[in-house]
Length: 425
Image: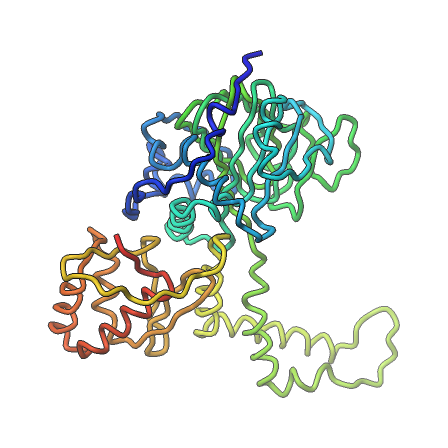
C-alpha cells in the first residue's frame, strides 16, 4: 500500500487568491468530451450508455488541481449552505457495501481522515470555487440540460473508495490526479431511479432494478484527464491506486411535470368543462365507469393535446433550463465604471434566449429575465465568437441597429451584469 501524507498536499494554512481563472470560451463541453463529439454524446451516451474516454493531464490542468482544492477547502470553511458538505468513508471499493458507510466530517478532519486511509467527498465544491461554478453552468447551458448540475470532489488514499452502488443522476467522473480503478455496468440497472441504491450481496429488493451479477460489467483504471460518464442507475464501485483526486460532474434530473403544472392549471381554470367537473349521472356504477364520464375524461385529455400546439409550453421549457447549478445565492452587482478598452464576457456561454410574445426571454441562474425585442442585435453579438466585447463595441451595434438609445443600451447592460449574465473578462 502506497501511503501518501496529505499534509504535504493540503496542509498549508496560508491563503492567497490565485491569478484570475481563464475565461470560458463556449467550447467547454467539446473540450471535455474530445475526441467524442457532443452530438454523439447526447444521442448515444448521455443517460443511455456508459462512456469512457482517455485524456491527458494537460487537458484538465486549468479545471482543478491540488492547490485549487486546498483553496476551495479554505473558502468552504465559511460556507453555511448545507448543500456544501464533506463526508468520509473507509470503504475499499468492495463489490457490495454498507449503505450507511459515509459520515459527515468538518474541514479540520479532512487530512486526518485521508491519512488514516479514508476517502472524502466534498459535495458541491463549485460553491467554494468560482471557476468551477461558472464552468458547470456553461456545461449545463451547452447541453440544454433541464435539471441541476453540481460538482463533487473525491479524494482517496491508496486502497480506499466507495462500494458498489448507483446514483439517481448522470455521473461524469473526471480524473484530476493519481489513478482510480472503476467497476461499472454499461447500462442502467433502473432507468432514472428516484433514489440512490447500494448493492449488498444477497439483496432481494427488486425495486433497485437489475442486480450487478445479471449485467454486463467493465473494469477500467482512470488516469489524469480520463473521463467516465455513467447513466443514472448504473452500478459502479471505485478504489484509489495511490492517492487519487477526481471531480464528479453530476446531472440531476427534474420531473418535467413540475414545470407544466402551472400551464395545465391555467387551462383548467379557464375552461368551464374543467371547472364543472365530470357530469352527474343516474346510472348504477356496477363494474364500469358511466359512458358520459368516460367521454368527459377523454375530452379533457384531448384539451391537454391542444395545449401542445400553443405557445403555453415555451416559457415552462425555458424555465426548466434555469435550474442549472448549486452555486449559492446570486450576488446583485452594479456595472463597474471601467475604461473603454476593458473586456466583458458572457459568464456561461452560450447565452440562450428565445423570442416570445414580442419579448426576449433569457434563461439564467434560476431566473427567466425578460427584455425588449430591440435588444436582439446586442444579444446576437453576445452569442458570437469571440465572446469578449467592450462597451464601445456594444454601443456601436445599438447605434447601427437604431433600436435602442445609448442610455437604454447601458441600462440593459447593467441588468445583464447585475444578474451575472455578463461579467468582466
